[in-house]
Length: 238
Image 1 (cartoon, one colour):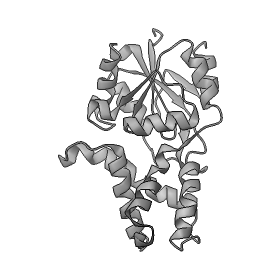
Image 2 (cartoon, helix red, strand yellow):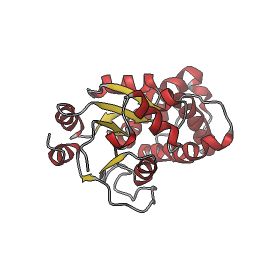
Image 3 (cartoon, one colour):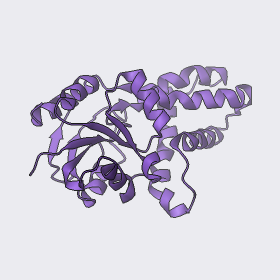
Image 4 (cartoon, rainbow, N blue to C red):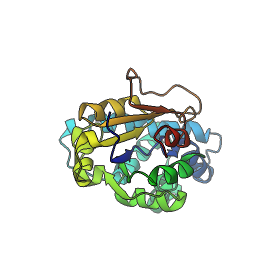
């Protein structure tokens, strides 16, 4: 197996801890809405649960591409409605600010150190469904040393559509087999492998607070496997 010439990364769950971060950011808003009785982690789970179905089915809807910030806000509105919460007390400006929680996700403890080590040997780029401004804000918040921010907004498609992976590869002026996707989700890796990319699985036990991941795709024999970015750096000779 030839060594990859670049690493591209899934971000939500792989690079950052979305669950704990969104839960933290949601606490003051739930208090303002008089629903401090709600478990903020369960609230984050409910918000995120809409994401998987929307991403999987987006290309089937025929809807014109919109950035993830728009979809996150639609998911928030839908989730509040399901919980019978009237958001009028915080208004449109408050809802938009709450939606910005996704711009302030904290990296996992090993993320930044591991990325800096990997970056000494490989260019690092996102291959995320997150839009460019979201990724930029998150990088500045968490100190993520990306060389490029690529993915859905560049390709105008959402994973697991092949165009998201292949558009990212083309932007790097490489061939699919020269690029390795790093992800904590078997389904994401399987879709990338079908496009000819190399794969690196990083296990994130706490992405869902210790509960099993909803990604039930059967694990494959990925080219690399690790339990942290620092371990991945060890395995890739960084």
